[in-house]
Length: 255
Image (tube, rainbow, N blue to C red):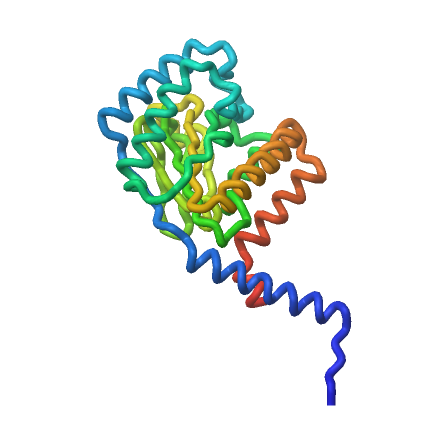
């Protein structure tokens, strides 16, 4: 005797199967998190970048809204230092593994000083991964140019809480590592570096497919982010919902 299933039951079963596969992929495929201090070659390039940034008229220092600049929007004089840092990461950290650098989405990121207001900066404060392509082996490296004691990066999967300071390098699995940012905004009134945190973000993919997916998805999500910078619209709320489902898919499965 055949058991008939309704349309909604089929949707539920497909959703459960999808969530199960995605959850297992994220757990099994996740690469290790890397935390280290850049050595002398990296430090000299970071120092040069920091000096150039301070003299670049487009940098909105002490801003209460985060800013992102793709490498194509940066002055040419920045690019030599960025290329040197990329070469160091591939040779000394990735140990010449077959990761491809994705220069199109390299960006300079200036974090917001404030946690006030409701805009797309809130997406950083929710638990999330940076893409939904859990089958991909893709690294994101954060190179700290200027640190802030107010901002903590929490890596949920490794139970790590990191306050990035100048010369620090943090590498994590772009698609599979759960993390979020905490803005403590005047933490205990004892901050020693309370300006805007400035990071260089570089991404690396292990296959041509993941290179293309990461490149296109990052540009798509960045456009959504910019469209919701001053006010959270429908698309911004949709992104927050998708972040929530992706981050807590295990609990969706249990429930």
